[in-house]
Length: 281
Image (tube, rainbow, N blue to C red; front, side, top):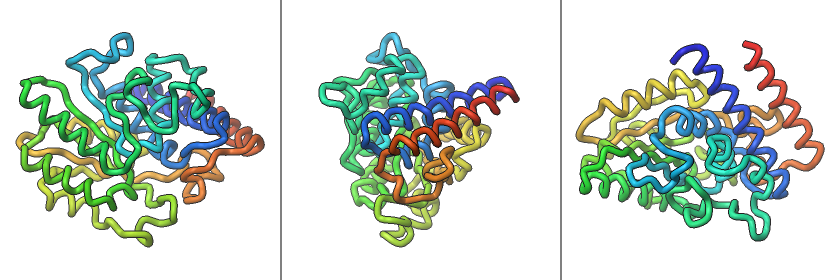
């Protein structure tokens, strides 16, 4: 990608992170940690990778994205809003009574959401089904899904992976957000899923291992995914939970806790400073 494109993506990732903080603070609830760790991924998907149309969210031939780790809806919503699917100011209604932006994605109320998710493991299964349906219908669209590293402790995830490989779903791309932390602590201590790449390869996937905060590596992995034929593709991205907000980084306690007023001001000041730094590059 060009330096200008990369700069634009970096700036947008800052705005996505600001949307996460704005939403969870206004809601006094939500999941900022895993939303922040996936900010670059959400940004790249909606501003570079996905063939979608904000003016026609239900366009039949669009690419699909399923947020299997549905609790990180604040990150998805921030990307969708900045992409033009709905007003950015609506992020402040997150989790409020009567808001269409609830704590987990709802495909019936949120423009741009392709699957209602929240029960861990089920999103990736739905995504694999979408990919098979696209094959049966001879459609060229691709299906992407994002899972948490704690989520892949679920047995249903591996049934879906086995399904994707069995049906040779080369239009299917699973991304694992390996930030190393879940609500109860380190994933390695709670129920180790390691080694993740080797498990995916054993299940029939082609695998790329990347830094999930590096746009060049993200782009390289998605380009590689499109060259693979006859098997599904997985991206294992190493990330930092709470990335971009100093006091949240690497802290399991910020898995599902909203910032208070003082913490909100600190986070927003850091993100505004980072945005200004990027824009001055």
